[in-house]
Image (cartoon, rainbow, N blue to C red; front, side):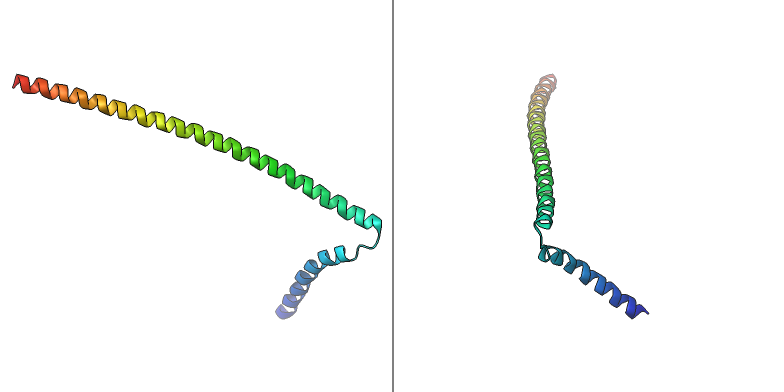
Length: 101
């Protein structure tokens, strides 16, 4: 029974793959060709719309990334300035301490 079920499944899988090819190979009338072309054009339009949406999303993501990189650079510069100021204050305090000693 298991072998029969396995063979039946293999036949169904092979049949579904061949069915699509047979559909296109068996187009015999203009009406069938028109229906096929209408379907393909619909798929093409859907694909182009999806591509446009993805490109727009990519551009927005790139712009967001650029803004975040600018913010990060500004924050790094600010931290560097604060570190420099801290070092200067530390040096001044050390000098005052040395003078007191």
